[in-house]
Amino acid sequence: MTDVAAYCLSLPGVEETYPFGPQATVFKVGGKVFAIMPAEAPPQTVTLKCDPERAIILRQDFPEIVPGYHTNKRHWNTVGLRGGVPEALVKELVRHSYELVAGNPLQ
Image (tube, rainbow, N blue to C red; front, side):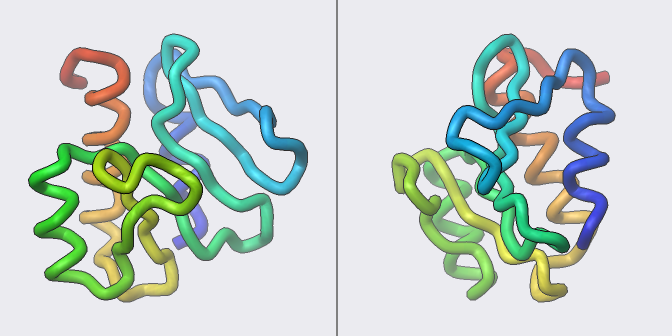
């Protein structure tokens, strides 16, 4: 799924940053990280914040969802973007991460 970055940027108040250098794109809302993608094209993964209980369930249900790469494994998942996770679920997980970080639900 190559439009994850575009979806992230479509959410209100999102900024695209490169605090780790050009190898990773970091999406923030209110100055806080909610998504991290490798800069490779097309990106193969996205790391997203997730409710800890839900994170465990997602990891059990989808082999392509694993504990977050270089993040707090309890609160972050890395989601594979090679087709094993339905596109609608990937978008919902991006939205979930955004809402957790922003502190309010999107309308």
